[in-house]
Length: 304
Image (cartoon, rainbow, N blue to C red; front, side):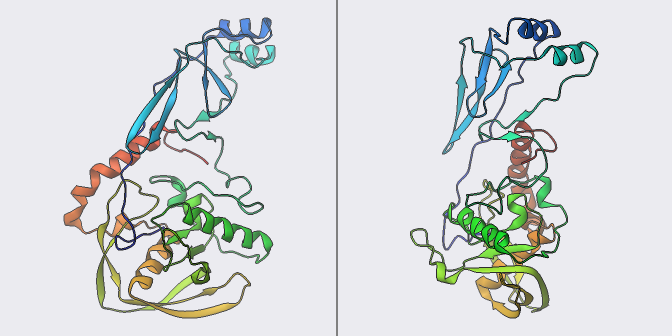
């Protein structure tokens, strides 16, 4: 995704922290199974329906630039833990455990695409750097059907959910397909949907030698202020629309910059890769902040 300071302002979000929770012992697991699942001293992570044994720390949520810690010291009911699970733990094979995203209300299970990403209307979750979806190979779209149209609609809904963006690429929501949407004319109070455009399997076939300097931001880098990036003044692109009809078009100025930004998402390139060397030291602390937040929310390979 990309946005430009002439249309919006960028906010900074505070990093979230998560305290490591104490795992229940084998004796606790066996006892819980024996008494039908009542486990004193458990705590509830409010957003997930997942019960954890620990000190009462629930998680962290963000609001604006603040971080709110949530605690629950009361004893809560724990779902039944089967004797088989306890026996497996005794044998040294720990039952599979779900990871939890602190502050985002999402269970992290696997690297599959978001549920219902192309079957029902929804606002999708934008992944943040350094999520691996931003670097993975993106496959060509092969079917031009109603599911693809629903995905395009979901991409626009996700884009309009943020007041700053003008474009969004499929890998930014964890779907590694060569597809992007943009609306360079959108306003915060009116999306002006008549200017929407969906581009599928795009290729840049020509571009200018002359470069223009623009300040860009990206929805996958929510804490980075607009930063200078050099882009070609114009580009020519080939691709397909939602009906599978081929097109070739020329983009200039701000529209060309947006096209290059979104296209590079499909190549596994993010806009911070294009920031000048002299500006990299000023951006590095913010990238480190995103990496720390990313690890706190799920480890080195967080999943959707």
